[in-house]
Image 1 (cartoon, rainbow, N blue to C red):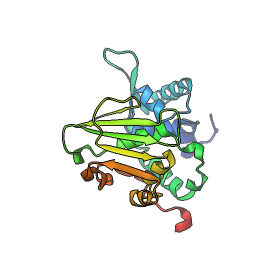
Image 2 (cartoon, helix red, strand yellow):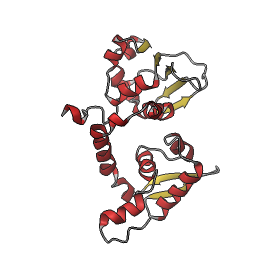
Image 3 (cartoon, helix red, strand yellow):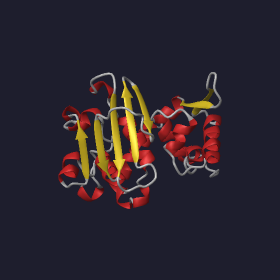
Image 4 (cartoon, rainbow, N blue to C red):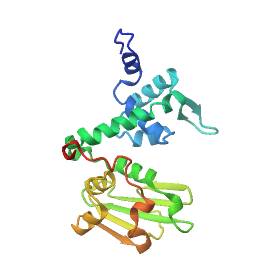
Length: 227
């Protein structure tokens, strides 16, 4: 899309203003490098559109596309110009938390995105021992209601099939409940007290969840109605 203007905002929008592009940049800046991982963070995007947008970002110099050694496919890395968009992405998130969170609907609570974010929120150095296994059971979905997060040192594996390991912590709730807690619209203590969230397991982990699984970077921002 071309706007026919010399304004730098118009020229920037020609590059990053297409549908999905900002969210693809979000995923890249949050550490996504593989095509499947990027697609998991953008569940409604088609593979064709994702591939097209990544090629476009590569052509504009925002993404470095590199062949995976010894494998099929590519990895995608944000370049310096893409990294410079981080304050813009963070600012959009701040604005969204203040002014757009009231527009959330039930269909916006995507379990794949939530689990990807929870995986990225694990503070591995706060976990004791060689391995920690966390199981999530979502009571409001029929397809893939159970998820396992296996942490071994700095390696994290997210799966929907039972890895056959002893579980250290069990979470039981709806997707919305856990998303709201992670986003800061509720707290673990309040959700547990009201009975909409259950956390069972090692007391050293259940009592201090936010020490080893951080909340969203936007969680401290109140909505505009509270300002």
